[in-house]
Amino acid sequence: MFKKNLFSVTIILSLSLVGANALATGYGQTLCKSEQYNCVKVQGGQSWASLFPDPSQRMMVKKVNRMNTPLHAGMTIAVPKNLQSVTLMDLAPLPRQSEANSIQVNLNQLAWGAYDDNGKLVNWGPVSGGKSFCPDIHRGCRTPTGTYTVLDRQGPGCISHVFPIATHGGAPMPYCMHFHGGYALHGSPTVPGFNASHGCVRLFTEDAKWLNHEFVNVGSTRVKIVR
Image 1 (cartoon, one colour):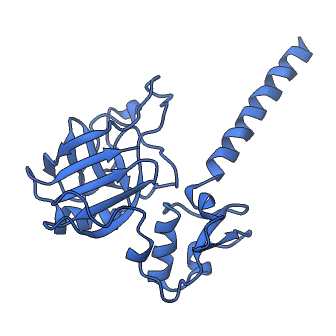
Image 2 (cartoon, helix red, strand yellow):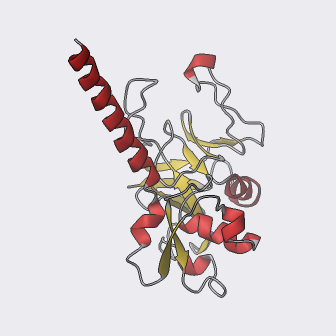
């Protein structure tokens, strides 16, 4: 019995370690082979602020890595080689032209792009869409692909009426913009460099506020989601 229990514990620990390693591998690591970037391994005690004291450069590196969560030792992040002179738009992973008055979301590139009335890309940022399986609801929760229209928008006090399951809602969704049933674009402090949501499209809160206040027209702005 002891050996059987020990074997079970070993399996559980092994799976936990695999999961932890998977979470440690963010989007930035996929850019390491690109000539545009240097990759940096984070050391103990380092943070976004200590590595990048300049706020604008710090935000740019966060967006390149598609994450606003804290750094931890052993993590690898990508840093633009010409960080001093490059602009955010220089690093845009999306087409420069697309459908006018639209928000394009690419769940593989982990990025959104805003296109003005002439179809020109005017801003972009990171996203985290729905993950393949959500244990709390016992099913997949990927963000649906397709083309939708922004149905409404709310301010910084927007909350989920479903999650967390244990409390029947209450999760913050600042500057939410619903586009399909309960699915929304919204701000979040946990955009981790991979798809991790229950189906909504998480954005940096600053980006959600910009889209909500400066870009979206309810009833006309289109949201196109692809993989």
